[in-house]
Image (cartoon, rainbow, N blue to C red):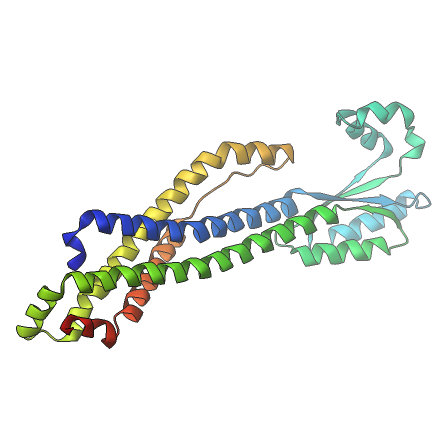
Length: 287
């Protein structure tokens, strides 16, 4: 193959292509992690339903059973005033105010655990229905946090898409320039192949192989760069998540995703080589 004759130049080309693949790959993988974070919050978080003080024990039991029968609710637990007070005492920020609050001031509360399969839209619908329920005085649900998290994940996804498009164009330019230079630098060899009876389809095939192998090496390097970057950020990410009370770690790609990334890199570089190798480019050999 033509590119084997200048390994240093080929190495620099592979490094440049791998960086171009790495940037959108990094953003896409971050989006996968933030999407898992959103699901983790959904699965770990609870919704507090404060019951109207006029409800007696029987009516509260009926309401509790209705909640347990809901498809999106994994569990529902009734907390008495004493249990709520105990929880407040265990909270570092709220324990200082517990002496100012008497048991009489604390309404009964139902702590609702959402099922893992429930979507964000289903949770928001449940909260809306609970807010208009006359038996429920107040619903404690941090909608602002989950909406901000949803916006962040969507932003990361859009950034990954835009960066992928931009870097694909950059890859087209880099690989196109590389192949054009290879054609120019090996005019004598290509003319000799033509005299020996080689067709332009056969000549072009070697350059398509070149683009494919550059894609394989660039994809593998991009995955390695991603693994090193995530290993570097793992401790900082864990520390940040622990401050929000969420037990989740930063993870890279699985084997199927790695294979998909390498396949995409091969397709992109092959297409770049194919678009560069027009009849006009190859005709330069005869100039």
